[in-house]
Image (cartoon, rainbow, N blue to C red):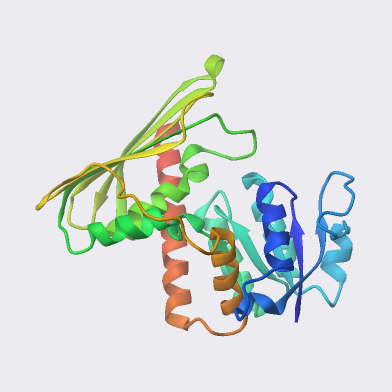
Length: 289
């Protein structure tokens, strides 16, 4: 069994504890045992699991794995601390706010002989899987992905990083991308922001990614993909999955810990994650430049 701690007790942290307490039977996730959680708040036990200190988690021999579920801006420091202590790490996206720092963390994980895994539950949703099937084999002419949602709390970073799930969709659907232009409109008085990034595929097809946020805006993804065979303007409906998204991610991470994921797949994930972080950084530079 591998002992695990959860850092950050928001929605995701509580789900991580729940999934480790009741893992999917017969899955690699059964090999994880939650030993405690870390929180800045003085909290009573959660789901029967007690709060422990950061120092205790870093120093205990029966803690092998850390789940980082804090606000985005603190991911990098937490990941680095646990990697230094030779603990495996599962961190919510984005693992860092810079491509350079992510490369350093991955190199550190290799040096310490541990697994570093960035959670991407948006690739596990049934709607994404259905969309990927629809797109396969089609030749893109141009496309737009427009996300709307409420205002973010402080600590989530620049929109290209806080919204990197949508960028990851585009990279997984259409391959390696480059950034040709990016702008940010802001109205701080109304907590409004709209980031528009112009992207190009490897064969120079245009993709536009928009992240628009304001209190009260409905959370939605709107697509308009023009293919040689015709347009796709709605994400295809999909049935609800039988296994929860965080549980699917937990099983994938646990399979890595058990050595059940091929080196080729591990490398493919690393390349995708770093590519998306590099694109997010370039978008931020252009918006702020």
